[in-house]
Length: 207
Ligand code: IMP
Figure 1 (tube, rainbow, N blue to C red):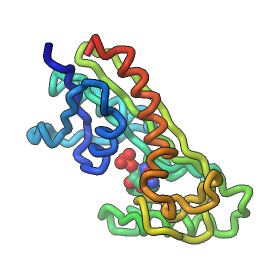
Figure 2: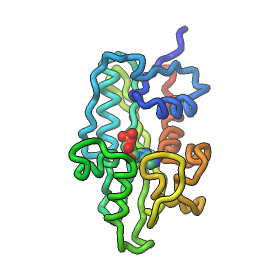
Figure 3: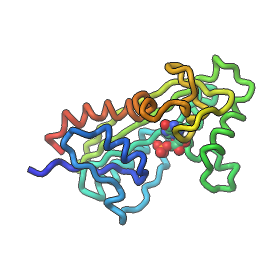
Figure 4: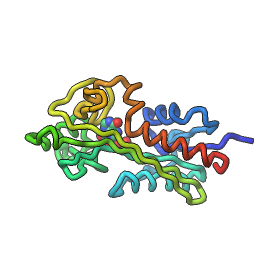
C-alpha cells in the first residue's frame, strides 16, 4: 500500500524543513506547495491565527484533493491588547508606504510603542495555530505558545521576526541569542507540531 500523503500548505523553505524534521518517522509522504506551482496564493485575511490556518488548510485540501497542513503564527503583547497578532508580519506597513516591512521595521515599531512600559507589564507570547484539513471536510487543529517579555532593546543574531526583542525567561536571554536547535525545542511552532503529531498518529490510517 502506498504511504499516505500530506501537503504542507507553505512555500517557505525554512518551515518545510522544520515540519519535515518534526513529522519524520510517521511513514507519511510530505509534499509542499512547491510541488503545486499552479495553485493560487491563499490570502491571510482572518481575524485570528486559527481562522487563517484553517482557511488555508481547507483551501489546499480542496484544490489538491489531499490532506493539507497549514499554520499561522505571530506575537501577542499584553500591554498592546494582543497586537501585533495576525498583523505580525505587516505590523510596520504604515511606515513603509505599503511595502512589506522588514523584520527590523516591525520590531522597531514595537519597541517604540513599548517605550516607558515597566518590565512587569511587558508580558508577551508567540502563538502558533496549526490546522490539518482532510479532503472529506474534517479539520483538526493544534496550538502552541511560547511565553516571554518584550525586551528594552534588540539582542542576538539567530532566528527571525521579533526574536531579537523577545526575552525568554526559561533561558534568561533574548530568543535571537538561542541556538536554533534550542529554539526549535521550545518554540510555539515546535509545541503546536508536537500536539499535531499526536493527532496524525491517531488518524494516520484514515489519510
Ligand atoms: P507566519 O506564521 O509565517 O505568517 O508568521 C507571521 C509573523 O509572525 C512573522 O513574519 C514574524 O514577524 C512573526 N513570527 C512568527 N513566528 C516567529 C518566531 O518564531 N520568531 C519571531 N517572530 C515570529
